[in-house]
Image 1: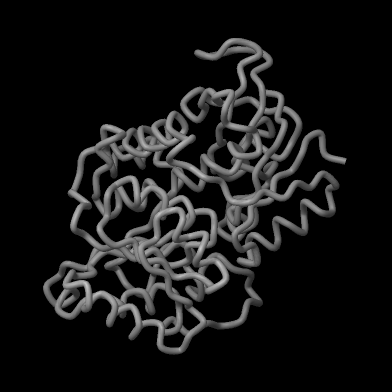
Image 2: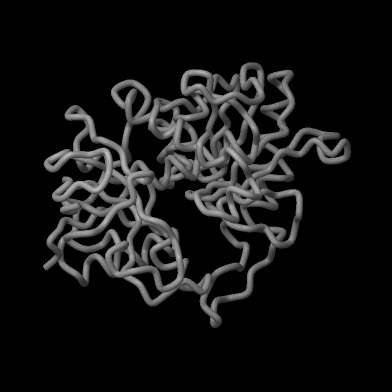
Length: 327
């Protein structure tokens, strides 16, 4: 693949702190097939992602001008989907799909994915202004949730409402948990399902000298406190986070890739479900997908700074893509 753009993700740096290193970074990409080894002919515009692994082969990193791609991680890019709109889609959408339709168990009928009926249900997406949260809001709308409750800075509420949020809340407000609980009570519905799309304050996969965090003030702990009365006591809490929540076993861990022998043994069919959702999203991008604003960098120093900012959670309502070849 000739890589035109690669997308920066928090995992580009976080995976180093997970023990995955000694490889070329980068997962998302948009480019053109040069030499086919699968179902795509030379010259086909594509978008795709690469797999996470310790010391993976150099050809697998997305942050370079050329790579070797696996067909199962590759999609044909429609002419109506611009490369910069495509490059931020695969990892974020796969992760959001795994969270909503695998970990939380809901269905997306339009994509041929069965599961719990979302109509009449409420879901809380904590961190809607990040890449995964942004994708989750749009997928939740497509799934038909009655209430898509989103936590993000107030300045981002209007954009999130346009993409499917029914009500937004500002996490910086001291009473945000009480505000969410009061709103849910007013709807007459029950909140039992949460996708924590940031995993802030969990103190996991961070540098050894990182400041100690208070789990009770983490996004996961705050989000769980938003659940309706009785949900936890009845064992009905339906919780998923983009990072492992080691302090609370009720949380499931959303991944952007379930492809692999162990994952497929532990969670049969989950990879296929996520892949169906992403394929549907690409096919229906004109109505179902709006990308975040994407800033392009090309100089290596700028790219390194953007990777650090993504890892530290400093990108809000924005993606950063590297144009290749890098300078």
